[in-house]
Length: 127
Image (cartoon, rainbow, N blue to C red; front, side, top):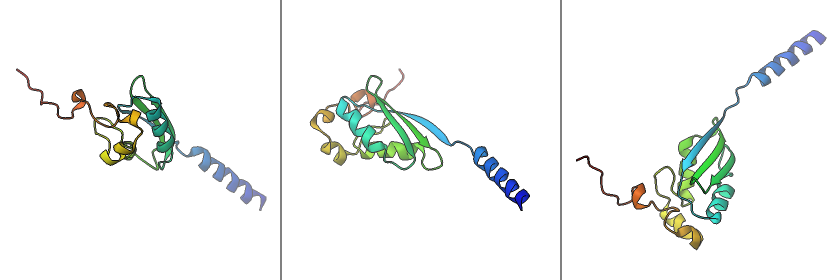
């Protein structure tokens, strides 16, 4: 009986230790402009399924997200950012959510794409 218990414990320990760590990271280009943008994204995005940590870098306009790849994927995280009203990797934020953001966050740069990022930008042609 002791041998069976010992073998079972060893097998269980090996299975637990042998599991792959499915933590992944993504950087999402965004156009945040102020501390309220940072606070809103960090406080809301952390509640998305599978998200482990969120850090907004205002200097580079980037959202750094660490997540469990078994529970979510990059597209779901981008969609969550867009639903908050902020741009994510060139896609504009949700207009309804954008209008609910604090006034400081509604300046050009947050959820709306700027001319350079693609909103109403003329098509580039080679001459």
